[in-house]
Image 1 (tube, protein in one colour):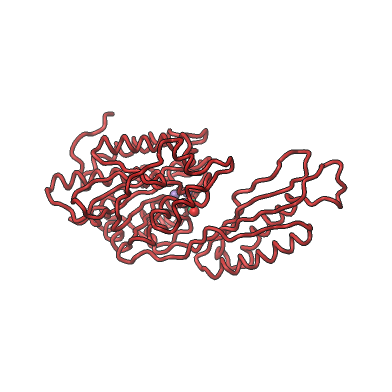
Image 2 (cartoon, helix red, strand yellow):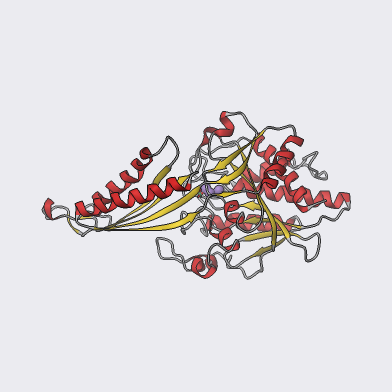
Length: 420
Ligand code: GLV
Ligand code: MN
Ligand code: MN
Ligand code: MN
C-alpha cells in the first residue's frame, strides 16, 4: 500500500497510515529480540532516532534546534516573536524497554503538528502562538540519573552545568556523550507558553474501565534514596564467617526492607523498589566490599513517602549496626506532588467529547516530562490505554487504534493551544 498524499486535516486524518508506518519504523531502531527497544540516552540507537526525527522534521518544513542539554525542538513559526506551544515526549528508552513509552508521544506530536500546519495553510488563519515538537533528553534516567533530565533543565528545576557533569557507570559524562553523538547543541530553545504531552498509561485503569483516554489531574510525590553499603572485601574461602563484613548480605536486607515497607501502609498507598543495584568487585571468589543501589518510593500522599523514608532510614541503621558496616543513605530526585491546571484538563475533556470518545481523570504514578514542564508553564498530560498495564519492559503494548485515537485528540488540543 502506498502512503496517502492528500491534504491532511484533523477531521479526515489521511495521515493515520503514515503515522502508524513511521511509528512502527522507529520501533525497529534498537529493536530487541522480544518486540521491545533498547535506546538508552545518547547511545548510537538514541542517535539514530534523533537523526530520524531531524530528517522527518526538516523534510516536512520544520526548523530543528538542539539546546545545550540535547533537547531537540522541531519548530513551526507562524507568528514572528510569539512564544511556542510545545508538544512532545522522549525518544530514549529503558534498557530492554518498550516501543511505546515516550516514542508514541513524540511521533504523534510530529503528526499533530503537521496537521496543524496544513490546517493553518488551508484556512489562511494565523494562530496566536508558534508550535514546536520536542524530544526531551534523557527522560528515562537508566544510564544518566536523575531521570526527566532534559525537561527539568528546560523548566529551571535542574542546573545545566551539574547535569552535563553527571556520569554513567562507565564514567562517561553527559557532556562527553552528547558530543560523541553530535547532539551537544548551541541553539536557544523556543520560549514555551504551554505544554501538552500524550503517553501510554503504563497502568491498567483505562483498560479495566474500557475508557479511551485519560487526562492527568496530578502527579504522585516521588523520591529516590541513594544507598551505599560499604563492607570489607575479603576471600570467600579463606575468611572465617565471623570475620566477614559482607556488603551484599547487608545490602540484600536493605532491598527486602525497601520492599516490605509498603506493608506498613494502606493497600497500594505506597509503592517502592530497588531498581538499580551494583556489586563491587563482583567476583565469585570475593566477599563484596560495596553495594550501591537506588530505591524509588512513590505515593499519591507526600506524608506517606516521608513516613516510609524515615522508617527505612531507621531500619537501614539497624542493618548496618548488625553487620558492623557503614551504610550511607541520601535523599535524591524528590518530585513534589503537583496538580495540572484545571483549564488543561477541561481542554482535553472537550477534545475527547468532540470526537465521541470516553475520558476519565487520573493521577500519574509514573514520572513524565510534563511533570517537570508543569512547573514552568500550564501543562496538559493525556494517556492512551496500555494492554495489561505493563511498561518499562518489552511486553509493553498499545493498539494501533488507541494510538490513532490519541493522535486525533492531541491534534485538537494542539490546535486549541496555538489558538485559531
Ligand atoms: C520514568 O520513566 C519515571 O517514571 O520516573
Ligand atoms: Mn515515558
Ligand atoms: Mn519510562
Ligand atoms: Mn517516565
